[in-house]
Amino acid sequence: MYKISPYSQKQAKKLNVLIKSSTVKNKKIDVFKDGKKVVSIGDSRYKDYPTYIKEKGKAFADERRKLYKQRHEADRHKQGTAGFYADRILW
Image (cartoon, rainbow, N blue to C red; front, side, top):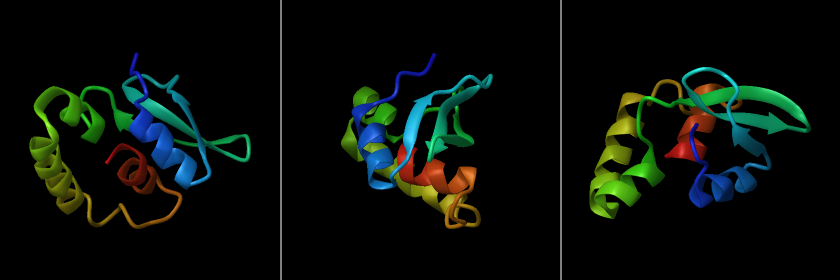
């Protein structure tokens, strides 16, 4: 099971959403808004920004963040989507 980082909790609070460990196979986090589940985000088989910081340091994590944002440019700006929340909470 994925352990939600303080970084992700802080990012979720900025978006005014609640996050919990996901009940969906291979997902990291379930996002809730106004008590209703909105979406499941993050593939548990891949790392994210807080994980990279912890394991490899901030410089490496910043490079991975840059590459993630480039790779997901098309879907990370559509508000309310899994890509939007993954970008804002995990990266």
